Length: 562
Image (tube, rainbow, N blue to C red):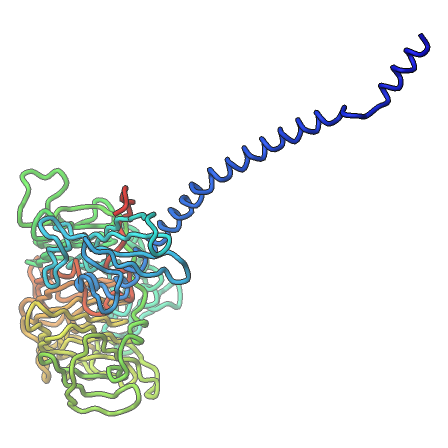
């Protein structure tokens, strides 16, 4: 018995072969686990890479849309070039994809121009091939992760026009700029009874940033100095009306409300929107438009709408940099257009004096700056608009960047000035191939010499200088901080109709004539005709101070990619 117990103890102490099965089993299990994990990782590798390629491809397609939008923003007429092979190799009509590299990455994109129904390609000179009846066009941007990659993603981008060039008439405020209150005071001294403000400062503080009806509350209670005698003078914020056969033939927009003092027609057909910034948006009468729910619809006028306010551009300063050196002038500058050429009298920015010098009209920008060497520009005085005189030949203060312009043009061009632009004669185009823009930083004015007495009152026709009879302006006009107006508009007689074929946008409402008893008695009756081309293109560089002429309306991914 003792020997048996001893033998059992000896067997239990032995390690021979006891752990080996456990080790082997553990190794086998570990191999199975490692193999399973490795198989899973290898199985996920290809989908992971594909997902990354899809993300890179989409980012590349977005880069293609951004590329096209940047070019369109720089040149609102860029769409009309169609494929533009010389400048943008990525562009093509459908059926061909010209991939280019995304800067700084491995991705590539191609841009295809999608023609309208009935066309197979964008055709230069035929906008209907690319821009649809709603004024929109589309491109397809396709991206891929790298050259040769079969993983592609496509984005359809739709562009539509945006901005004041969609309207024959666009105002921010339907009231005078404070400078024009001098018409009422005849540039005499005024003072408010309750403060030291004169009427111009009062209007700046109380009227210039208010829309109707809030603008109906302020009231100037003060005095005016006439030949050294102070008498009572009071008034509210200026109110300018539409009246007496005024025609605004095209889409219309104001951020304000309008005043009516007689019959005026808005729009050409029910598709022309007549937009106001508040409800009901009018007073003094009922505008000649189609009101919502009107029946029957008047086929010859526009449709009334209350819409949100649209932003107004702040400055044209950037346009100076767009003008070539030889087309940068300073101080009063006189230009007569003639086809593809123009004659210039004035001074170049470098100081070179010009006298009736002929030069080509640039397909770009002409810019007139203030001349600081002649002092500070005092700005427009409506009672003495021509260098201290109310009458006579056009003239400007030596320090002011005023452009005086007339003639017919046969080139696409934009004229801009640091002060005013004064139209001294008809400005007309040779054909519908051409577009012209006028962008003063202050006032856009119509030359209208008048005769005034020493107190500034109208006393008859000008003794020198000739008011324009039935003037015509073929242009897009943008008065960025002031107004489009007629000099001496309140002096008789009526000189016919002021015809504008293009578009007018002004920060404040300018006056072109006056009325009495519902009849025009001075200045001009409005005949404003919208140039439908402006819904799709613009004069050169014209949109720099504002939103792009075209806005990216929407993006939609095309599935599957092209």
